[in-house]
Image (cartoon, helix red, strand yellow):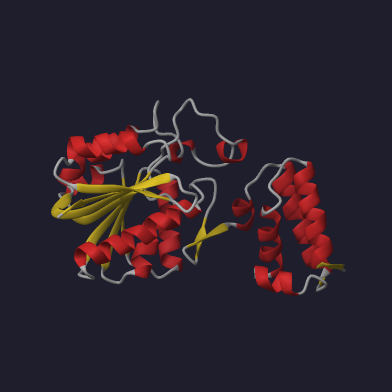
Length: 283
């Protein structure tokens, strides 16, 4: 048997020697041993059973040698304290998107004061945003849309696993909602926003669906599409919330002024100080 310290040291060195993030291997160690980070750090001399050592070494080699994200190896990502199934059909939820969810919840409290509302998550992917909102706020009646049938199946599984009551529609952005004449109080979206010409980390480009990554020549294709038609699916009093690229602040402001000239809106920074979210309020 080997100790936690020995395994972590080997894995971190192996990752760094091969140009990989060494922080990722701790997630794999937690996954294989079933221990939390604080438990590992509190007892680095803990002996790890041989079968777990073998499994951990296999996972680390898959991550380093095959360039597979640790989330795909584990089969899940933790988002807002909940485990979401992820695979190569969906975008792996990012920490910045947790901040979007937190800001939607706080803005909802400010604007609707806890009243029952209808919410739509446009382009849901794994369901991270919509399912989390449904779990966290019982007064939110949540609907999600998604173009990819495979991604929608992942979102449905996540909703089922977390006991979330969510309505699912397969289709392109707002189209399923417009076709059904549906209206919402809150529209939230984290659409694909990487420009087609931008260089992308191979770990991301080779393992995550391009449908969920790229947003046209300038990365703004889907924001234009959503904002152009948003008035067809939101009630007069509404919140529209987006995650976007850090360098899209001015472009997003122009789009909001064009389509919702009488709204109040602000750009919010993420915890890294980057302009990452635009929140629009029509009241």
